[in-house]
Image (cartoon, rainbow, N blue to C red; front, side):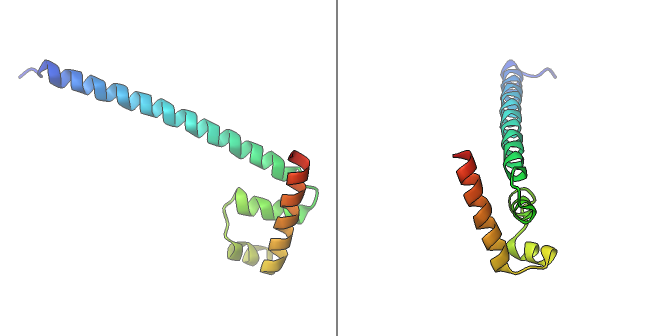
Length: 95
């Protein structure tokens, strides 16, 4: 039994919507990758290796404070101080 014209049109409309949405999502993903690359460059510009590692673990790898403490075997205060120092340096350098 042949499909009705309205059913065929509806399928075409849905396919067009899916393609449009896919293209939009692709553009958004590309923008996110670009932002991530810029963030990596900013973090890599830090001279202090401890600040660099902590910022990378926090903002690139997405680790929690406790995960960073365990991985680096240091206290929360050390991590906070290094983060604050890095943020100040980044702010001064990029603003």
